[in-house]
Image 1 (cartoon, rainbow, N blue to C red):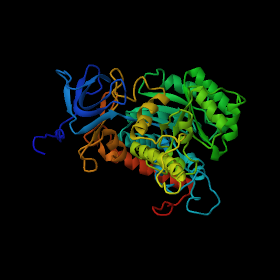
Image 2: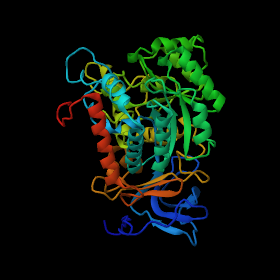
Image 3: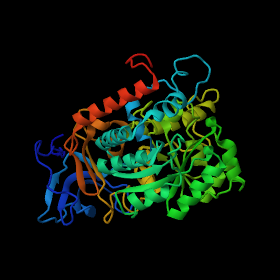
Image 4: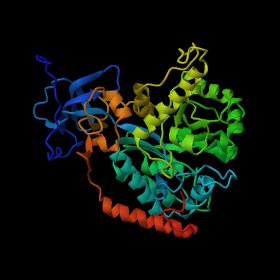
Length: 491
């Protein structure tokens, strides 16, 4: 209408080079003019503001910052927000991507395309046993770079490939070489004589993780399903070494009795705020109450749990108990590992269940009833964004350094293109991120102040060489397991 003016965001220079030596001490740059979603209630959100970074740290956020002498990143038309956090991803399985597109955890005897191949038989008891240290390295590195490209700046690598100390060292080195924030999850291997789990955690901690302030830190895998002797040793050792403890909890995998023992105080160890449990599908009310009261955390892998028959993702139970999850991708053998898939699936699944519950209460002549007083609230885009950033950082013990855009925290930042064909015109920043965007909108990614992806291009990675190495690893794994390579056979 006449007399009205609307700001039209414009893209920055298409071929502008990134500022030099980002992340180095004393280096300053300002991300100028983006729509800033801080995820920190104390900082707030801005339709247009600046983020000042010095070295690896955010030093100021606000409109029109005085940043004399700082390099400038033009963020007009971009959404500026914290990097995403994935609290459970098996990075070593990258060579088997999409191999289990139909797959279940176990063969259910149905003879269907979902019963063969399966995760336990063909991944854990098949491919995994054939991994050499060099396979571990390229798989973890390639997966890490792929997630970095998608805006995931922090991950918990649930690394179940520790057949020997050499396998362990290869996994840690790959996480370091990826150049993003990570928690290395030291889990079991296949139990061969040269395996050193869990006792090798002492060496790993001393050699690789002498400081908890590193970009890559350590978490102990403490799987309850391995038996009381093993998990009591791993949990005790973790607490001696000052490590958080992560473990799967899947009722469909026969784990419920062990968790009931923990809840009754008969498990030999105590659950505490240093525990992160993955999935928590099919668990008893007693186990859930024990987790909540102990301050333990839960990571939900919504897409995988629904597809691979772990059980219904327990988001409703968590809402009833006043808990919130973090989000995890789990396995690329079966589903994508990007944060947009995780957020959309979480929101759609919870709303489907709640909406059906509301509609089931409809009476005659009232086809669209109001929810009853005990109906869980529908998840919003803000909720799943919080799960994917703030909660993820907190569940990994990293809330003091990442998960929000807050002065004093590390500069783990993503710039998302809101001028792109799939988003414009921008009407809602959180709405656009969750409901419209995909990895193609991830334009720039920053970890600890260092630019790792710039205007759509991952920096410092020889992707053609790494892809060739990953393909060679895949070929080796298929050969060693006696499986025929066929691009159409398994789905």
